[in-house]
Image (tube, rainbow, N blue to C red; front, side):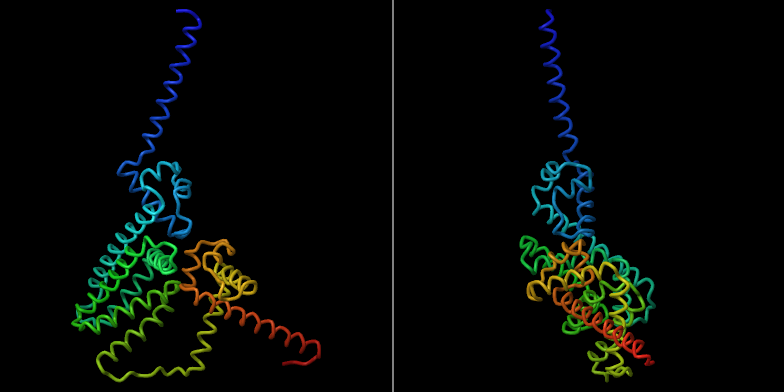
Length: 327
């Protein structure tokens, strides 16, 4: 064999080896069952951290160290990726509900009544399952705003299962259909209200009274009014809100971005996704602290009023010092 023939043979064999290596690389990137489970789990964690808006084949590839093409090959596009994440959310929600109920039934005394069981379950789930509950709420928000219409059937099914869970609990305590629906409404409302509350003692204050009052109302018992006057209660709520805003930097950044947007465009042009981008946080973080657009705008105006009051007090103190008076 001549020199040119040997060179040609070497070049051909190198080309064959290169093609084989490429085929082997593509094959190793094709998700096995275990790899597919890891991809779904990584996609779920990414959605929890950054929100559904940031979930894509590219972002998931960056998280897992794979390639966007292999991820698209497995999921078949972003729509199927979102559906896979929701399916994972549904599995985790079902397991979390069953686990929380089993542990509460084991820990609570046999003579426990429904209000105490509802309060205990709410406390346990809000303390241990806040991540998946927040993701479920974000999913509902995405669907309600029309941004992810393909997820509407799945989201509606998850909401129905959550309601069925609370209705089923109430029926275990011999509640009728109307009463069971009332308990489900209360549990769902308190869950959404208290998702951003991390202090168990503060959550307890918001859970105990409504559950006791609903129990009394359904039993046609007289409702004992709170001994706290409305003015005092309002002052306590304002002080609590001020404390929360001052101690959470992420919430403050979100409120600053909201106030800036309101100043430029007006309150009716506030979009949560845009606020998240301006504050450099995820959409999940915005909905975590402020569940709805209304909550966000209300909190922004409350923060604005708080700052104005603070500036006014500062000016009054400065004026008193300048005049040589003492307030």
